[in-house]
Length: 488
RNA sequence: GGCGGCGUACCCAAGUGGUAAGGGAGCAGUCUGCAAAACUGCGAUGCGGCGGUUCGAACCCGCCCGCCGCCUCCA
Image 1 (cartoon, chains in turn yellow, green):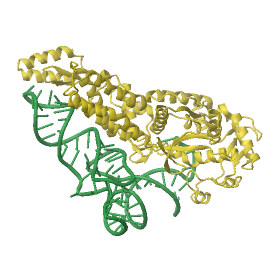
Image 2: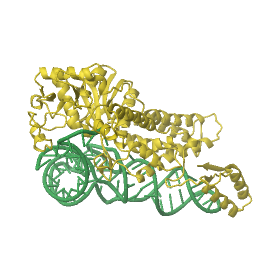
Image 3: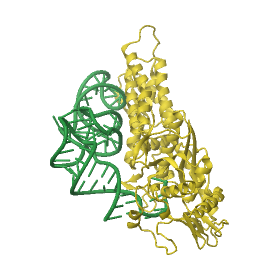
Image 4: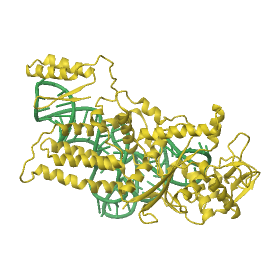
């Protein structure tokens, strides 16, 4: 039974979709005016994980993630770059997909764009006006916040509390400073669509109300997600718009992920303390390939519970890599096991590992069912690595090794998107290792020569060869039987 | 000013009433020509501080200290 924290009730609640096994889920995507940063990466990974876990629980998930492709920031960017706003939107939409591919986040089932749903927005705004929940002023339309008695229920604030600290610009045309724009009259050169209130463009919040109901074909959806910074005003306003218009509950669960921070401060454009996904991939050490970089970043972002802040730093990425080294080192040991299957009663070692393997899925589910406790799940994988290493140092039933691999690929791979690097592509070099551009050495020949030197007890030659290999980025470990393990 | 969150070992991080998961770093041991790996053991009598409730608290309550977030665009 999955329990999810619901921002609306501030409690973990048992998740059950409205309609049988079908889950309707909508997540606020990005405004395409710039490259995505790590905060967007985290959100994308977290909700993709929620989707995967729901599917794992045999739910049929209808996952919608939108693009905001008309917005003040896009217009500003277009003006700055002297390009049409559509081109700016297209450029960063493409960049978004590129970043998601880097992260290993597949597309949602539907990825609607705001500009594809203008008609629906105009219709919804008309409905709100008719109900007295919105009013037009000089080509703009504002939501009449005071008329929606539940305004503030998501962010758990009352209207007067919001007003007290309001830093909103005073606009004499608005009845209440907290009234927000549903429709904005467009100035010349700005994106514009016809409407009963004149040519204009939609406000930010209306698109999500319209697209979630349209794409999910239901006025009440199961899960609505996004970053914590969207709780107010964005999601609060979505509720006001949707519930005001339909009279029905808009979303049953509100799920919000925590921030990525730098020196404990929220990563944000305004502070300028952000790293784009692209930058992070590029600044990782040169000896790591793209798949390893993806895995390190994913593991790092998943190593903290999704609602808490994750503090980004190089040191933390290095620690993450060290944790992943354990997994790939285990695989190397697996590949060295030569063990003849023996008949007879299972030994104590076999029974022990079998018990651990049997318990694993149960423990994994228990962790994930508790509001997606990924850090606890990752601890299980680490424990499994230790158990496997212990087992493999004594025995090595092929079936058991296969079962262990299968647990990693099923739970860690398909669900968490980890443990997916081609083992030979994993670099065991320390984070700070700088690949030498030295002439390529014949590794096999040097290793063979070293093995011979060791047999001849010529240890100074042996150590010299080890240094030579190390300089070429080859780590060698001597095994009990005299052979050599090569790691790169 | 209002509202909310957080503070767990050197670093990262689970745990939210029953006596401190896991990873990194470190130290010691087994093994080893050496080294590494792997395994084993050590490591917070303690969970920001002070009180309180309780048979029992990191987990509940109160006060204090520190950090952060939201109240404006933001994943």
